[in-house]
Image (tube, rainbow, N blue to C red; front, side, top):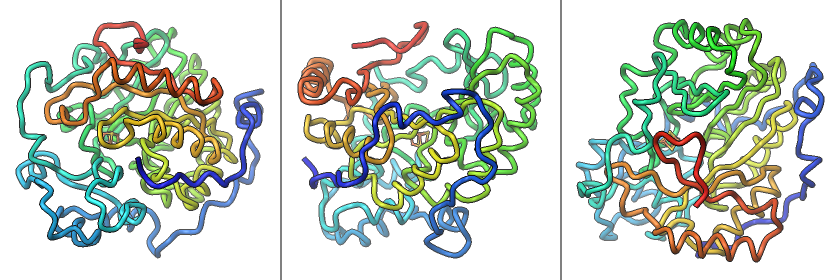
Length: 364
Ligand code: SF4
């Protein structure tokens, strides 16, 4: 499925993709690499403000206004549409089945309430240890840094998360820092959300300055979809901040289809690598988006061309409103086996599911 992926970029060996900050913990270079030039004045915040929020406008931009697509205003009222214009530009004009469009379009199917699909499929509430802090696995603390995202993914496992009360930034990180500081078994902090890079760079610096006072932290991980969906976010200020962090930093980006990556995303990812970050990709296996061997192979090889190694391929988290994206386990396993037969081992993501209460992601 999908148009052929662009795979013409420079290929990187696995070793060459591990930045110096990961290999040696030496300080990153004082001068971070140049960010990609902004597409429009006002930078990334302006691009974020100009994101499309009306399904009718999205369909009109794609020439689909007269196509019967079972778009639901009720689904959009429950979880509003939001999609950056640069991401829309990567969709195929006139294609109602475009794999990027399917990820963002609110449909009637989201309104079905089905058994087995809940509000908190991954057990976030039970793993909460302080405001906006989730601790599921040994040695790691995840901060729900913000409830904001640049894009609203219809399959999102946190689409029902109570961000109003549960973001770590609410009290200027006080509870989160106290909790992390009090537990010297935590050596890795994961910034999640929402999307942590939707916070301003000064706000991120406020957080990492506070984290830097915690002596037992050894690693920082950032889970973000912004470098893919809004590459303008990778600006000079962000790179400067990233380069100056005192820990090895891993940025786990989130692309589900090779068509999400274009030259501008390549430039943003290259700049992140140049600032010392190790780049990994996690994807969700989604019916109608990437549920073919070709789509998954294209995603891995296109990601590698952009300097990103595949990390996880998640089975869908069963939250209400996402059932139409589900791929059954037998099909998922068959796809994964075919992918492993086709690609080098380092290009095959781990096929996993998150089970509440487990001590790690569970391999299928
Ligand atoms: S960017 Fe991540 S947190 Fe935000 S809607 Fe998409 S999947 Fe959910």
